[in-house]
Image (cartoon, rainbow, N blue to C red; front, side, top):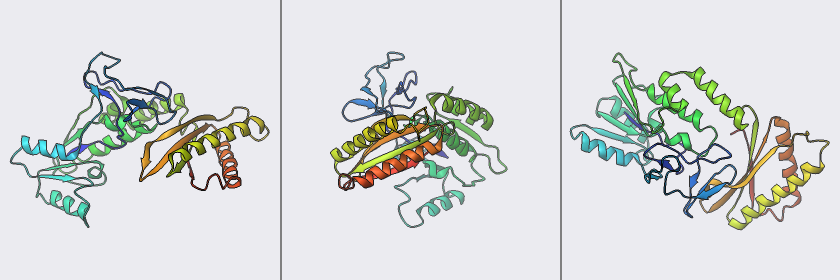
Length: 314
């Protein structure tokens, strides 16, 4: 089985020589490449010009990834012309019972190699699989999500568990630009406790859940200006409220990040902008949510083309 790890992939920039990834200096998440030639952090809005030279080693071989299961399937067929190859992804499973047909073919011995994304690694039992190849394990490590390391560890351990499930022993080969990363190292060792110790230190350092609480406020509209204006109104209003409402809000005010564009800024002709609030006390964030909801209700005319969604610790 060949598993392409594309979960959370949104176009990070990586050096092919040394493996260096361009990260936000404030949030420790990968910057995302945008068509305007800038790299943007989708947590705090920080941006910088696109890189032509790797800042770590000086190599000119730096850029984004362009990979897909179809390309891998083609390469496998060229390398192993006698092999029977199946591909399992969104394109090949569109029809009714598409997943089941491919899995039944592979389980029944009608194919030698199965190429796919994360849908091939969850909950399937193939006793005859003796080799699992995990391609580009780095891709999910550098998504613009503070849980990227956890999700990568999860996927790698799940994928590794597909090989050697029957009487035959199995091998796992992981392709990565960053073999020293603790998510990869701990997945190789199946060391859940070791991963937790490393990850919880990162969460404590960056004040991310479960150490702290995080509330995301997603402001959306089919009108780009309206989405950005509404996010700015909410930010200005809540800052003023927090400054004067000291009786109800603790001394240590919540940390506010943004507004910043969502990782997919425009989706189905809807523009989305995000505000983030961090605080140790969950009730403080629910208070802020109540204050903002009342403000939106009291100013309904200004928000008639706006959708505002609140999301906690996700």
